Image (tube, rainbow, N blue to C red):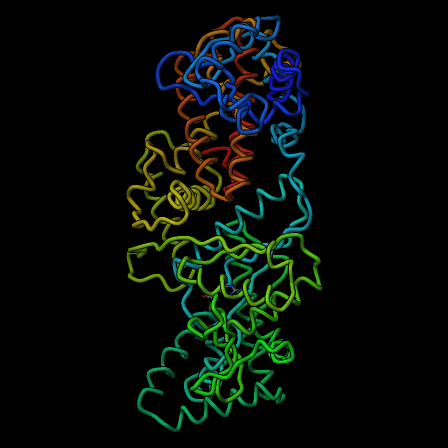
Length: 579
Ligand code: ARG
């Protein structure tokens, strides 16, 4: 497939330029489909050749391009060589293109298409730890947690598809003064029965109530401090209540995560690292990195000039640790436990500075592996609401997506009779959420819009699902035309060629997403694929064609369907067979 063509063009260039194939590969890439007219298949970037010293960079670049193009003759693989602005375009033999792309399908591993590309060979594939979702016990699950959940899941899926060993970690906010308040508050406002019935709801209520109370009631504040002190000293009664809160929260979350197809290998949390956090402070001290501020807090000087103009607080004046101190300890602990080759944190952009400081302090402590840690920041979501108001729990948003989608399905003329319409509505609703979120750069803020994201036409998750279900139905209905072989010369219409050209680019798109960890490349690629498939449905009927034509077209549709399904799964979407 893509590698076959890339290699043969590189070999051809290699002979002309007296270079190895491998040296030329980075300058070659598949061409995104033009809006109008037929596009070439590959392009060679002359700039890349100059930058890598293969061509002299003093010469006039366009003359250089033309000269090289003239030296390249067509052959049995390359049908046409043409010159563009500082690029040379290659069009490969049409029949061979169709043959090479579509012969990949019809095996059992269709969804692996593109994943074994040699583009991924140079990538270091070790262990990747991805930390995402990370909500806080008894607090709201806000839009930022939702974004972190789906983005982290995407990154983990992508890395895994490309052959990394992935550890999926949820780092709960399960420690700090708020647990003093919660513990003290539970004594007053808590109810064991309600806790059992609806744990997240009840913990949240108690937490809200006790915070209100603490505004004017010194007694409750005192009780909270007392409770937290008991926790820090691991007194068994306080600890077992805290443990219980944590356990029921994790149970509930596991349940809800399952609905969006998300899971974690490890539920860690801030609580795991309170002891180690003090050790980190001692290390900072012994390495002379811990300074005392005027206010009596423990700080690390991060200013380039060493004049304390920019510091990071790691210790309160009462000697207790902070969020960052626990993160320092957590990072060291994870490195020891999992020996990761890279670690990725997914949170909103307001924590960018926190992670910057975290990595700087780790480096100062001599942990050079901090360079392999990365924060993936994302923007804010405005206006995430349900019909009943503000979103407090992940479940609220999932329920709303399901209800709205179910309603839309009942209004739609194309909806089929389904065994479990709720389940389908849920999967489609969630894909709408994900696509809305993944379409732009992660760093951008956006406004949540139920109406727009659930539209069946337009670039939505519903459109992806609809296209997938329609392809599945076509394949089901034409089972008799499924064949082990097909004749590529029956697929030379522009519509078929366009789909094959688009499939040619799949590995490069995955590569791009793996480089910058942005899902938009894959999303826009899949949306484009769906538009191409829509034209193919109109122009390339299967029913009523001769058996040979039907077989060939079915192969094209099956291939497109596999890539669509595989791509959706990487995004964290469960493709539906019917809707
Ligand atoms: N629990 C935090 C919050 O809700 C997010 C944790 C992010 N991860 C970390 N290692 N600090 O804001």
